[in-house]
Figure 1: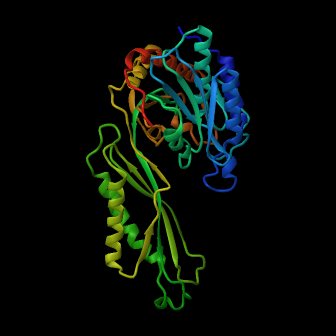
Figure 2: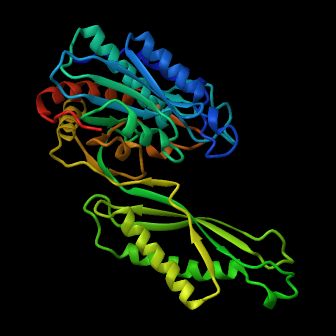
Figure 3: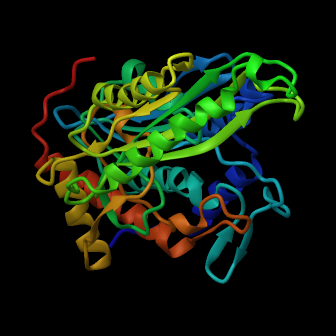
Length: 393
């Protein structure tokens, strides 16, 4: 049996909830979005006596991690989570944790400060029990997962070398070795502005964008009919934002859309860009005077596709079976930091995705306790299952 200090777990998570770390999604105060939370998590890691490191991803935004040193010879395992949360508009008292009916409420409680708190309790377990892992255990808090995932991208290239990772995104303790990738980008058409009483003297950027939108609608339909991946299903395409014009009495000279392309394992970014460029080229062939441009993706996260026989996957399956009696395997619905970490990774965490980004966010305390037990069992199992050599960066 693995004992869990529930009081310490709740205290850690409550402190995190009280610490606002709202991602500004590229708007004002972006440089301080997670600053206080990074400081708090660093103090929590230092209080456990860990070897602590950090790096600035951009000015004022830093990843923080702690290392529980192993005795040598075992795999280096990463437990990673993000420091930021979504916004709180319309949320009453988002930063005041409330413990009620076996749950803890507050912004970030589920997504995903519960995971960070669970990691701290994992460290305490090994310290209380005197258990020495062969390999190093690294616990990391990363910035900007909710927007462009610059924290995990930076960590994957510049952080400590690791052999595998467990990510505590809320999966209701389901084991998720797969999720779709995500590419976000901006497409714009440019026209010529004139008074709306003389439309033939101008070029209407919104009308031109309509031609592109028709092509993108057909593209989305075609993607939905492709052969599905066994877990991830079919790729998808969505237009989520459209902007154009600034005066109803003027022919608009600019129209922009932001598009979201979800990829499945086996697809590449270059393949996707070629497909989208073909749609732009087709529209230009129909309207030769069209001026259209596409920006490089501001988010480009590849699909997660960890093999079923990877040591980390086998260890988490064994751990879930031991702790909960079953080991359900599923696809994670959203994109995560996991593929950026450049190692085999599995998502498994307390909480339901339905609670993420809600205005009454909460997580089950019992599920966090089980998550701690799962991580401990998996880490112990990995000492025997993993023969993976240290990764080169």
